[in-house]
Every structure is written in structure tokens, then in C-alpha cells.
Length: 103
Image (tube, rainbow, N blue to C red; front, top):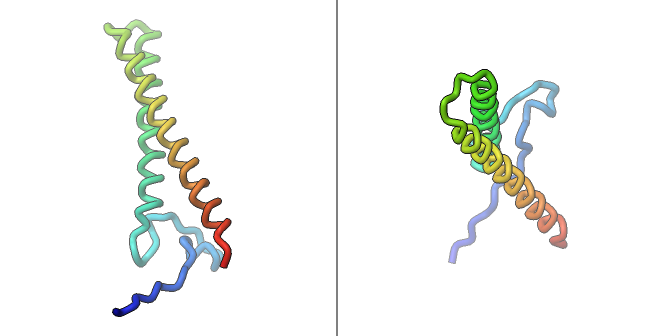
């Protein structure tokens, strides 16, 4: 039976330690799917909130014929925010669990 070795742990933002600024998308090397999930969730919250604000503005100015669209947009924005909060909570729980592991 052959054992596989683990690769060394490296910082997510290597250039930031050297004084440069880097975003997640600019890192060379393997992809970071965990960071991509968070980025996607944050973008979803921004988009749904912008749509909700636009619908709310249109309703307030009398340009929106169907007021139910505002309710639907508000529910979408609320749901995407709740998803982001749950992702954060699960990540913090996983981090706490990893910190409890004794070496």
C-alpha cells in the first residue's frame, strides 16, 4: 500500500506577505474552490440587493406595475444573505473544530 504525502501548507495570499496586494483571483497555483464559493455568494448578495433596490425605487416612483415584484426581489435578497451567513457560520465552525484537534 502506497502512502500519499501532503503538500506543504502555503499562505493564500503569498504576495501580500511580501508587501504587495493580491486578490484571490490573481494567485498562481492551484485553484481555491473554497474562496470561489465565498466570492460567488458575496456577488450573489450584491446582485440581489441591487435588484431589490431598483425594484423598490421603481415602485416608489410609480414606474412598477406589479408590486409583487418588490416582494419577490426582497425575498431573493434576504435568502441570498442568509445563505452567505450560513456559509460563514459553517466555515467558522469548521475552523474551530480544526483548532481543537490536538497534534
